[in-house]
Image (cartoon, rainbow, N blue to C red; front, side, top):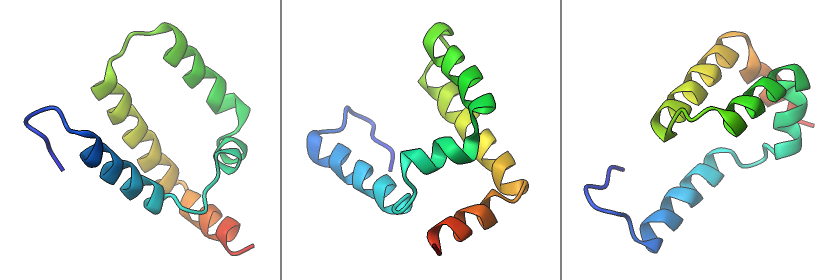
Length: 83
């Protein structure tokens, strides 16, 4: 969904619900445990001190997700959800 003008609260709520539905069952704790502290801390440092902008942050997140998927993270996610 692309907005040419600033989205209103209803639009933002719909987008948020969509992402929550897509990640349902995957807790923040699971994400931290799966990512590992050795991956999390460098990203936290970048988020705290580097001004990379929203677009670049989203693209980096997408690339990291792609790499995780390529390395078998999907199977680990399925195993987590089946517990």
